Length: 194
Length: 283
Image 1 (tube, each protein chain N blue to C red):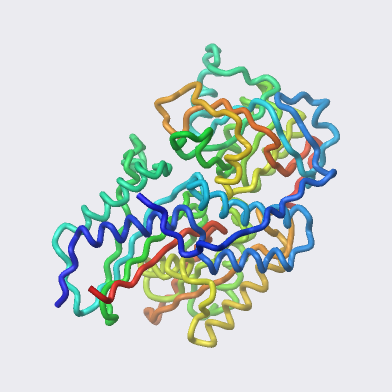
Image 2 (cartoon, rainbow over the protein chains, first blue to last red):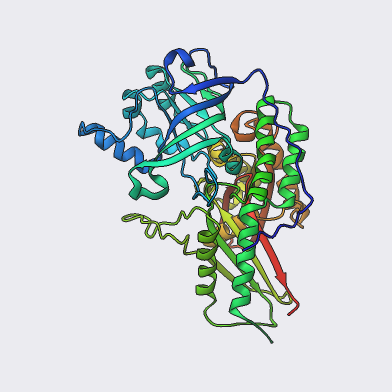
């Protein structure tokens, strides 16, 4: 099958200049690493992060309630709300991007109390969730949505590690380099959306 | 009468699905570039740059524009001179299944909405809409809509006496409450009139309309412009980080309605609104 494009000569110069204002961070994160961050800051994140969304949250919470052993360590971890597209042969990752975070607002406290330090998604969150971020000294980043082919170039590895029966909703372990994020809610109650 | 072979229709739809999944339409690219020219917030500028860079990578590396490869909407407008072979629904669904499997697109459709929610592993069924038209030949439209943008769809049955001010209020309410969840700058699609069921169809048609077209009735074109201005004055900006462009366009489609009703549907389409179309009039 061939790709039919109407714009063969179309090209965009690579205009994305990383500025010295970008904060480089390495996951996993401790409180010390995020105390200087404020809502609106641009961050480039490297290191290992966990991919989990709706159904994976429900299962993690059930396991926490039953005091079962979790399939992944949560302390100091970064949770990315994602559901990637399949990996084509010869590529490291399929297209990858954030899903709407608001759906996880009511599911986040058990994970924060288990030590999760940061969440990555898209869109505004509830007032309650923002209060929880202050309480647990955790941070909420937004990743640019709808630019998933571009974000895939920042992924060094991705693999399903648990709840594989959930398909795109399984738990993933990712290693990323300079993954572009914006601080939406900091540990002091700062909010980019207000 | 011209007979359209099912295999021909299926191949056309496969090509359109591929074009939509990997190439952003020209009018949307131009609109994002124009938003970039206007923008002064450095974070918003970065977000717009990512969108332009994304289109290039998607097309060259054959990676889908968005990881959410969407629900597939297929619209067929059939002219009076056309005869379709039997079995086109099955053919269109198998076109979707084949493209989503061969092109490594994410399959997001679950079998039933409430109980099993089991992935159909084919991205079937597509939402197929067939209408009779006075155009010659057949027009095929393929639109892909992600779940995040689908979730920002609202229907209001307004009081007819409330008029356009109330419509403007409702649109602003929908935008302020939801827009950051569906990847702004968005394309606002508004349906006005008809019935509760039909107005949703008008809104989706509006949200997938080419950005270079305005409503041909100047009163509705004026309302489109007014709403776009007010939405962009909110300063919510690309991806919600603050900035000058919260919406790329506001498109309205309208139809006559019952004297006791004023149905209004407001849909938000993301900046990565994927669509492709082809008009077959020579055989």
